[in-house]
Amino acid sequence: MKDRPILWVLLAFILGFALPVCSCVGTGAITMGALSRVSQQPMTQVPGTGDAVAVISLNGTITAGPQDYFTTSGITPDRVRSLLDQAASNPSIKAVVVRVNSPGGSVVASDEIYRALLEFEKPVVISMGDTAASGGYYISCAGDHVMAHPDTLTGSIGVISQFLTAQELLDKIGVEAVVITTGPRKDFGSPFRDMSEEEQELWRGILDQVYEDFVDVVVESRGLSADTVRDLADGSIYTGQRAQELGLVDSVGTRQAAINKAAELGNIEGEPRVIELRTQPTLLEMFYGFQTRSMMPALEELVGWTGVPSLQFRLAGE
View 1 (cartoon, rainbow, N blue to C red):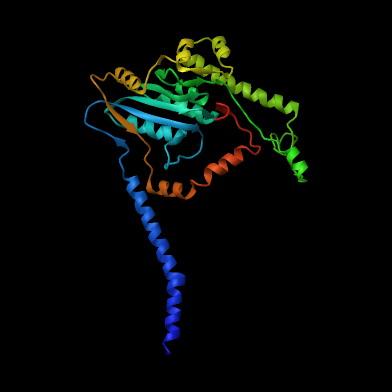
View 2: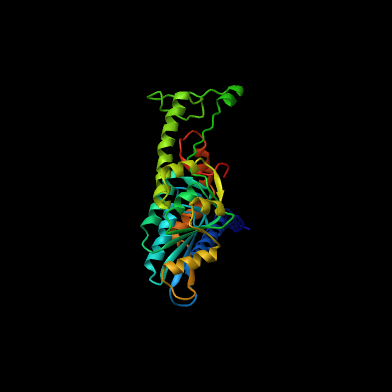
């Protein structure tokens, strides 16, 4: 009977402390083991031997954020550079097909990806999927050969910037925002007040500068006159077939046709091997991504829509 309180204390310790700790440790071990197995998977699928064409799939919105290793959607400069490094370091890869399926996104990220593709030394064939519009078209201009599916939606050459204004809503619910700045334009684009006509003109001037940069990229890559490109660059969407007729792409065809074209440019005789490239994270990167991926997209989207000025090469509504 005298030992019973000790037993109760021991049982309480096991249920209240040791069991939860062991559970957390076990869960962590299982998670780390799973991440380790994923991280040890090969970066490429390499059937057979001989010269090969690499396929890089770029799906989703173009952003400047970190890579998300748990999904194949989302296009970042880091992800593209990582994939191009794989293709450059593999001597059996003679050419690359970049499969673009994107409505566009960040202006800066689009330009960084465009430059990375432009500087890549092996032949690059762009293969457009369902959509390669705005920033998706911008990065496609870096290809040595640009091929669209006849029904691809492409074009949308231009710049867009969107701001939310919540002033009327705040007035209705009786909320007043107090903003203290060091200058009259420091809260430019704030959701707590309407943008003045003067501020809209200033912002339009910035958009016009970036628009001209987009026009210059198309002029240089497609060999069209600046006037011709400006006539096409009013935000209009074109099918792949129409884009070929207008000189915005080189040809129309399927993914396999793009692979065949890449093999031709890479001087590969016969049917080439096809290597699907994907990014390969370290164990630490995967664990960090596992911890943060659920909150980061929502936070980034929230910040992007609450008054932070931004420029987008993006198809509206996507």
